[in-house]
Length: 209
Image (cartoon, rainbow, N blue to C red; front, side, top):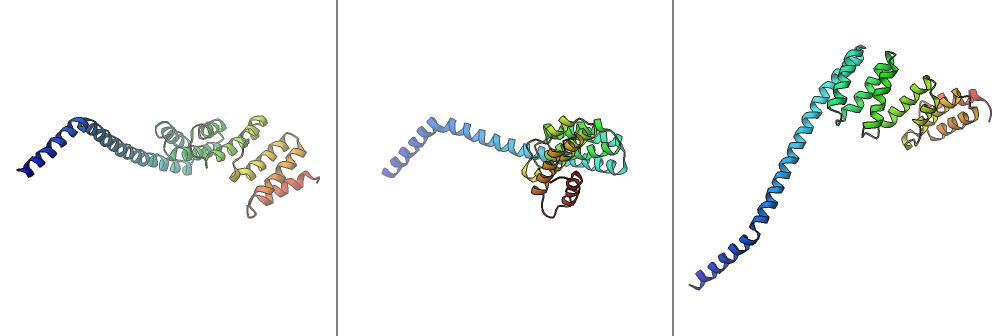
């Protein structure tokens, strides 16, 4: 009997505890399960989105190889508009920009590159877009805009940015500043960089110390 009484006390205590804490516990469990389901759903959506973006990117690559600018424009537009959050979007914009430049459409190329600079979250690709934008602005003789793209160079791109800055300064007739930029490029480029002899030639062509 004592055993039954003790068991009944435990059962009553458990019932009282559940009456007090059961509802909050169930609510927390429900939130955890909902969060887990949402996380799984989001991962599934991202995988599906990336897979679809890859198909469009491959179509863009094919169009670029074939020089089909209209298809490049269509594929790039789809990727940037519908799949801009994927890793394929900034790569597509860079590839499309190159195709447009090859076709002589600097306006379309500029739009693609600006998308990368303004909307991409890929820190490795943004400097590439800025370098190419600076090149386009240089060709268009928009020197101030070209130099603006070369501010705050990431360490890995310091040499490339300095070289491009030297080109712009040469075009502006600022020989001393250009010389300093080329020297900076040589100081920061990797020893084995294929660009080093090119920069050295530019520097030698300026003469002086």
